[in-house]
Length: 226
Image (cartoon, rainbow, N blue to C red; front, side, top):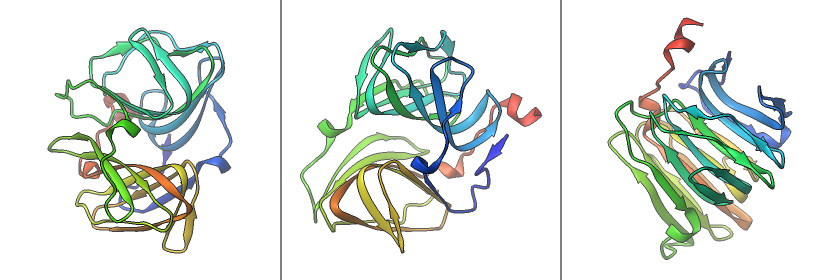
């Protein structure tokens, strides 16, 4: 399966317009944003857990990165409320579940194979003082990528020209990019060499962003053989 698999092209997905698709586990549904592979895949997805749903124990051979968008995500390591950013690097394992239900934005098979850095942060706690109406935080940085979050006041601008591609998810509020309004949970991916010029809407905006990573597109071996 391939969805938005040409990383040389810009992509905008208004995720609220996508149908929920069932996953192999009862009570767990997803909206696929990009994907190379079938059930083992390099993937960017929004996943919804119904109350009381669970996934069996599994190991993340290619790593897992996620944001809790609403509700509370849980595993044997703890509870993660909305606004939590988590990195589970390659070789880590867990048993995901959600007693009350939750929605997460998750990226799979997008880590350096040697990365062993576990990370759990509540994004709002990381934000610094606003500059020109934008409060920002660095969530993770390495030689491959920079992961940040930003809270924009109404009308504030977010300008980036980072090398290696740009990806963002609107967590709340809205952003205007060129002539298109990106509302809550809209996902944007810009290829290497394309800059971002965005302006927050009348209610402001909260944004998660990753840059630099599109130079390192890693695909699971099983997906390459599919």
